[in-house]
Image (spheres, one colour):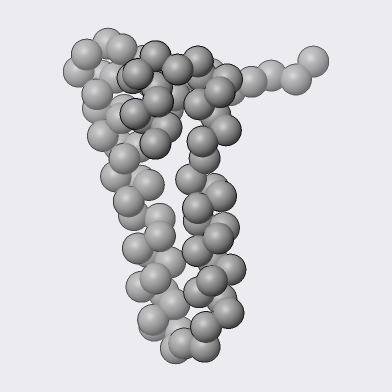
Length: 80
């Protein structure tokens, strides 16, 4: 979502709010409420993080290839 918004020209300050953190937090709460074995929880946690890391890697590759910066390549907001 962040990558799509970023290359569509949406301002980075707005794009920052479309976060995978919310999706991962909801999934964590859901899977934490279900009884499961340790191995199953390990696989689920990997499957939650792996797609995000793949999108981030592809986005950084897109920036490197085209020179167009994305949300993953912008400096963080500094509070003063």
